[in-house]
Length: 183
Ligand code: GDP
Ligand code: MG
Image 1 (spheres, helix red, strand yellow):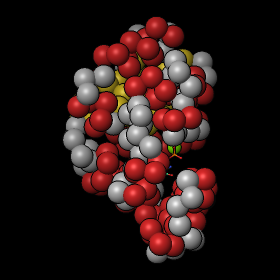
Image 2 (cartoon, helix red, strand yellow):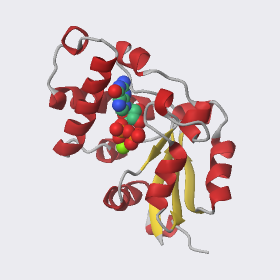
Image 3 (cartoon, protein in one colour):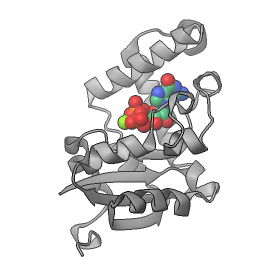
C-alpha cells in the first residue's frame, strides 16, 4: 500500500468541485485515509514548498522558462532574469500566495501505486496539455501566458505528491498520525 498527499487548491474549493474530484478518486478505488478543510498556515506552506530543495526549484524554474520560450515571452523583460534558479524562487512565492488564497481541502489517499495513480488522474500541470478525462483536463482552463503575465501560479485545481519520497515528507506536515485512519 502506498499513500499520497492531495490538496484541492482554493480554486477547486471556491468552484464547488470538491465532491466531484473526490468521487473520481473513490471510483478508482483510492481510499480516503484522512481529509480536512483548512486555511493553510504560512509555516506549513513554507515547509510544503521547501526553500532549500534546490533541485526542485531549479526544475520548476526551468519548466517555467521553457513555457516562456514556447509562448514567445521574454523572461528578462517580464521577470528581470532568465536564471532558472531565480525564476524557480519566484514561482515558489506565487505558489505560496495561491495556496493561501482561501481554504484548501487536504487529504491522504491510499492504494497500490497511489502516487502515480493520482498524478495520472490529475493530468498535466498545464491545463491546456492535460488530457480530457483528467481532473485538470476536464475542469481547468488557466493558461501559463495569463499566469506568467500576472505573476501568479497557474491555477490547476490540485496538488498531488510527485514521488513516494515527496509524499512521505508532505503527509506529516499536514496530518498527525491520529488523523490518518485505516479501515
Ligand atoms: P505539478 O506537480 O503538476 O503541480 O507541477 P510542478 O510541481 O512542476 O509545479 C507546481 C505548481 O507551480 C503547478 O501546479 C502550478 O500551479 C505552478 N506552475 C508550474 N509551472 C508554472 C509556470 O510555468 N508558470 C506559472 N505561472 N506557474 C507554474
Ligand atoms: Mg509538483
